[in-house]
Image 1 (tube, rainbow, N blue to C red):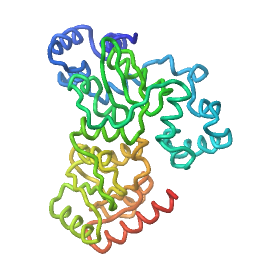
Image 2: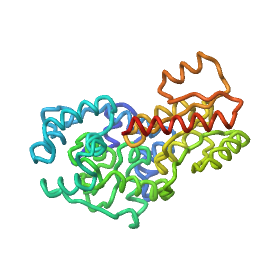
Image 3: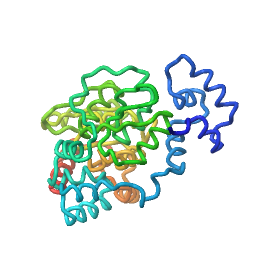
Image 4: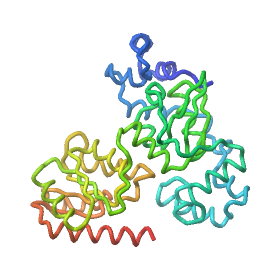
Length: 340
């Protein structure tokens, strides 16, 4: 059994024992998780909580004692050693999860991976769980930011056990962090990444996944005039344009709708363009989505700064519709070539 989260936070001096006692009193009878109560008290933010948990020593940190998904797939003869070597090299460059890399290489599909792991190692698997109902107290066990970044979904709590949908059952770091957050023993249930994201979108973000077949663009712009001009121009070209007014909202939309492109203003409320770019690139699910910066600071230095930070392209203001359309078409075409 993992040590309770409150005890860990006190031992690491993130909060005091007195603060923990007050938080536990406030938590009683609310059905909220401890981290949520502490966040509401203004004692610690969810981001600080996640960082603190990552810094904590874990028994899974010793790589000699940690099962590696790639080695297991080779031993089970699901992939060859040569394929694993190529996938690991690609993983080092892209920063994505191994299962996602293997899927993109066309070596194994998500469903084949789930079925193979379940059959070979006796793990339970789950499909079509998006439409089920889940108690709020179960969903509240894990923060939205955490389930989005780790691509996991809490399915059911029974006594001291918590069943969690996860793509990689050998991801010991994630299961250990779940135990530390909830104080429960984790039972991993294998599911595909897409089905987990569907469940997160519906039950955490309260937004169904966009199933449009056309190319979708998320536009992040807090000026209604500029947003309307760009949206109208791109919609007439046949694109599905979703407008967001700030960076935090945009990040949720990117995960929910999985667009082919993001266009973001540099200066926005809550999270600026650079922060949004870092968040998109840090998540393996969204890291390959190209992001274009839109800014009124149309200097050479600003353009070099943006491109150096990882933006796919740079569009200066005032906005010229023809320029936006040509840059969007170029970005989408180059992105397709890179993927294939």
